Image 1 (cartoon, rainbow, N blue to C red):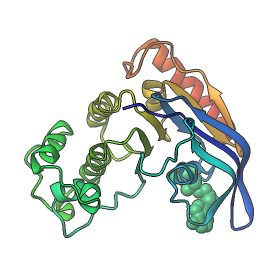
Image 2: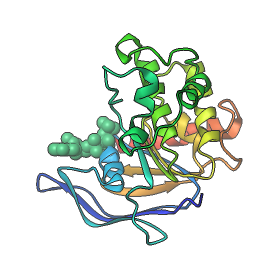
Image 3: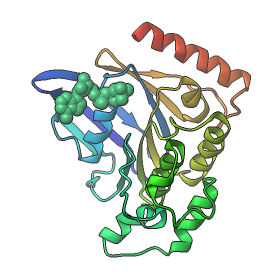
Image 4: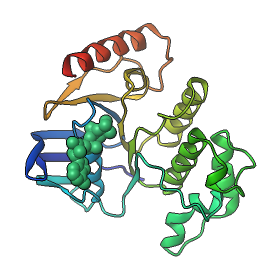
Length: 240
Ligand SMILES: Nc1ncnc2c1ncn2[C@@H]1O[C@H](COP(=O)(O)OP(=O)(O)OP(=O)(O)O)[C@@H](O)[C@H]1O
């Protein structure tokens, strides 16, 4: 699978006001890019513009793949809300996209993903019986099973405790290696740990911030990771 680059250029508006831009955001093909920024800066809107699900937010410009082919059909979006269907069990929730397209991955595939996310043996449960962090991992499993070259993640680990978060970050980093990932997060430590590249959206503009030099996923307590976390925290405080 060849993962295309992503490019978003122009000005985004909502309700007649400028949300961000004019700007030029680029994510190289096959890289994991973390996007940070203050609440309301437009990070989720930017993901939805790339996914083609932006609704009230419009773009005077373009959101496209670097290879010129349409993005439609090549993108999986994990939104901030988990969108789990309460009447389906976890395996069927995870397989919902494939089912809507007329294919049907096996329950064993869904169970295997749950297992890797620390939810072994829970495939027959309904979402109503889960904690917030468990629901978030099911939504991640559904996104991974989509098996798309471009993956957009909106705060995918925000509900997880520290130990689970680190384990699930590692799992996702390995599962999505070689895909083009744009990952919105509020957590500077997460960006310092996971990003091949790191972008900051603030004041309507995009700014690139140098990631630590070694390859992700990085040790959370490595000096370079901690130093990048501190630098990003300072930039976020300045942008607030
Ligand atoms: N459908 C919509 N209708 C009206 N306003 C919207 C809509 N979608 C987004 N907005 C507005 O656009 C702005 C940016 O929202 P967005 O969710 O993209 O920000 P964000 O950076 O992801 O914030 P957060 O970090 O809090 O999730 C907000 O002021 C929000 O109210």
